[in-house]
Image (tube, rainbow, N blue to C red; front, top):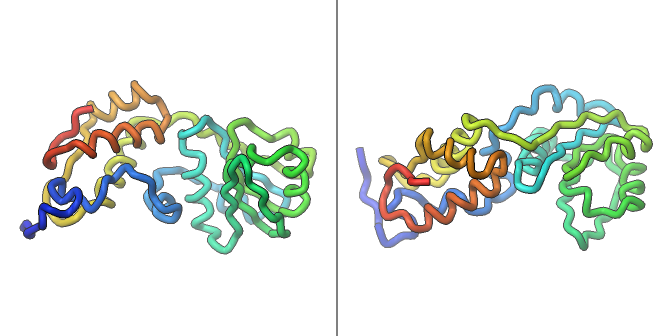
Length: 208
């Protein structure tokens, strides 16, 4: 059964409320994440443990960290930038996104304040974390299989749904082409699809 839709609304002609591949709020990113955390939630209950998500820009490090943080919502979450000057209050568990933006001396201060850490970094910090007294669990986030990409794309489109009825979709061949072109760079895949969805004229299979 279909419902009447005001086609003057943005993206109503696609049966969407917005472009599915635009920037999301952190909580929504965590809810839509397609990640495997395995036993990390249990491990984070230990003291002097550091979980690091390591990988290139755009490959899902922050998404993994957000999904893990959703299970420990009371713990502080710091998103760092090159000019960040965060206040490192003591915390039993601390989540730090893009810790590489902190100079090494300031990272040492953070290590003294947090009993347990979960963080993202472009390059593994295992040696300095171990010197600071942490047991380190490293998860490399540098490749994503086609099935995971397909599920992420499906969730993003469904999240933007406006009403019952057809939606644009990316078929298996399109997912394979995205994988071949961008590898595991989820951010680049999302940017590519964002541009395509900006120009779609109706719900249909998306040509990638």
